[in-house]
Length: 573
Image 1 (cartoon, one colour):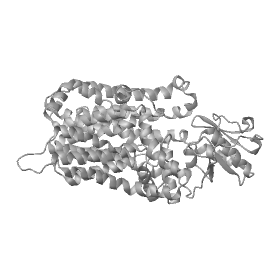
Image 2 (image 1 turned 135 degrees about the vertical axis):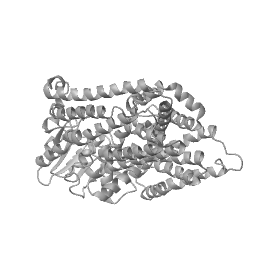
Image 3 (image 1 turned 180 degrees about the horizontal axis):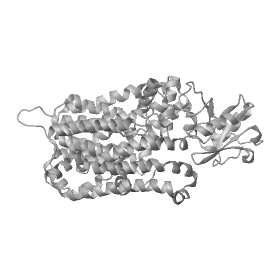
Image 4 (image 1 turned 180 degrees about the vertical axis):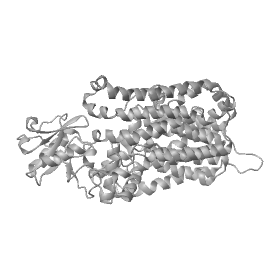
């Protein structure tokens, strides 16, 4: 099959960009924020709008030090515009993913040709991690956009330049990336391979390497200072232990200490290569291995590919050094790898290779469609085989039968209709189709099982008139569905300290009650006198009234309490 002409490639790219943007927006408003991260960021955004305090993100009225504020600013801006978190919390990730697609396409077109641009876009569309991150309310799609913009600016300057405007834009983008999630500086690693494989042009052409490059550091510093300066000044002015702890946690513990001495998500050094990449970047590792010789030949003759692939390797090495590892950490490297694969596939197609690989993946896609449809049929006609393995979700699993059957049938028909199209197009079409069904049919069915909405309604029915409510050992989603002010005792404090502060709080006034999960080990309350409210997020929750308080309780190591008063009604109906 011959390569598409430039005009054909442009038309096809426009189609795929539009289709992907539509799929990224599908499902918005059909589900609430889900654990673990979405409720946290949604609640922080909500509190920014409610309180008007945008400099210090808060969670339940307590400063939230885990991440810088830029993603929360975008989420809060969407919420302020739309007035409903259910509609707004997914928008930043969706729009950032569209922006990343546009940057990758433009790089492919400028550095190579429209065919490479088309194939790079298709690679992103069918790689599982890209659409997954684009359709969740997490921070990684936005930081990936900033990092991709940083790479874009550097590549425009060094390979199509000099373009000093784009070069300094890259440094500003890195600063915004740092203000989104500390690793926004990753494009700096690209300067190493650029120094190896790009030189100043001769014959009087304008040089790309000049002392002027050092001014990029100033651009980054000034951009970060627009946020960091006011934040540090306010912390100094307020001077409270809470604000000082926020500053130190954000600037030191959540950055350097988290990298050097991670306290969760601890994985072996090879985790990304042996466990994460084969799954979240499938089938890219397979394509790179199968076409290793054409890739090696392309690297020998194209310094642009060397720079991109070397940068991807440096990013993977950087994150492999830390003991703390999650799949999303390597997500920012995917857009540049997509360009590498786009160039590789263009060369493979031009050389008439890839027939067997295309046939293999065609049958793989057929098998995937059959497996999805078969799983739906099993749930429809023989559900007991699966339900006994997950009894807690038996009702939910049973409702997924028809969507899975429909998804499998639609995929089979689609794959037959487009069987003569390019392999990358078939895989991209499969990916988009799956996400259409997930967004419109599966998400709404799963949603009631991923939120505590029903349980919070029970709390309202159980509490007597005028009662005050506090929580310990809780997650942010309970704040999202609150119908009343909620007191808590520092989300970051140990559970025993939260409990002792709660005991003191309950002694201060009558008609106060405490919401607690049963897996919290308590010393100040009699568990036998708790009122059960049922389960939410695989944990049983109970209410403690004054009669459940023990006569004495050790004083808390530190007196802390925060009150969250939701001022906007109907946010999560």
